[in-house]
Image (cartoon, rainbow, N blue to C red; front, side):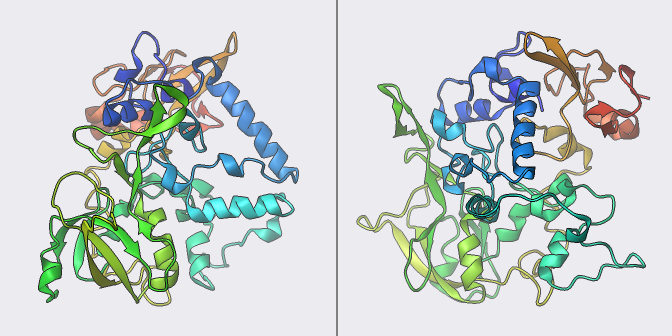
Amino acid sequence: MNVAVMNGNDFEGRPALSLDSMPEEEAADTERAIRPVMAPESVDTLAILALHEQVYAALVGGAAPWFVDLLRRPEEVADFTDRGRRKMPALMCGADNGYLALTHRQIDTIRRAAAGVGFQPATAEARPAAPRGGGLLPRNRSAQLHYEAKGNPVSSRPVTSVANCCPGLEVDFRAVWRRMLEGIVLREHDNLVVDVEPGLRDEAKRELVGHRLMRIRLPGGGAPILTTTPVLGPASSDPAGRIVMTTDENPHGLAAVEWSNALARMLATHQGKEVLCDFSIDTSDALEAADDEARNFATHRFRVRHFFEADSAVISRALADAGELTQGLCSPWQNDYRECSCYYWASARPDYVNVEEAGGGLSTGDNWFQKKRTGRYVPDDYADTRLVLYDDLFADWEKWLRFQVSGRDAHGEGGDAT
């Protein structure tokens, strides 16, 4: 990745607002001036890569992770203060246009490692091998999800998926959540009820179309599951402080949270059981939080569907029928592959390749989509003919998508694609 571009820096004479990045997206959503996430002079790709290698070497050597407090919690994805934006993973966009967060499971794995003996080097015995004959013989559901096919990198497995899509853009994961509550169909990115299922007889629930899910309360008490989080930013009068940022379109200063994280606790304990769901009374386009004093919500009971088919790792057909997990993706596939660049999230495709030291602590290299390798990075632009455009991919994707080995073009340095 070209970290300097993703940081929100001006680049090669182009202003940061003209480059797709999380700082640019944040500025558009909050109607505030764009500002880099990190100090602009500290984010060259090679410097960041060296830092990551040092951390990885320490972990492999047995040192316990020290950075647990630096991880972004799922409810902090709209914390646009400098401290909030610099949490890990930084610079990347999540499913609902906030900053990317690891899953609860990934965060807890790191926390347990920090409290234990640290990471240990992998051994051949620790890695399950494919059974003889090439067949898949999983012992349980977890084995099916974590199975390592020979030759496939770690980034190809569901456990590494981020944001709204699985590795490689095979699945639009938001489609899974639409029918999680029996009887209604929801839109994940803004909590809107868009439809009711034909068999729903409860008239009050049938009137929920156009209203928004504000929170879920689990029987037995405990903190409610919120489907929104405050949009926070630095206060101009107190740079170390923070305020709730509002706009005309977002008067309450709220952002939707990604359901993969938000609903994890509900799925862990209440699949097949009923939960209490609070929906907005108002049908405004703006997100709003439930207010117990104002009673701005109506409560309904809903049964939570099971996520998997019985005794398998197959996503329940009640959640997504044939074709629905991919209907939100572009067709042909080249559209999404061209559109979803690394400026948005950790997509399964490279960005900054053939990187070399350029002196002065800086680097130089090529954009993976550059037609001619010059060693001078061309920022992504859907109209720049120096880059592979949509029509180029439709006609000759085999020509332009070059394999990478250790960050370099496999067929050699420089020149046009062959």
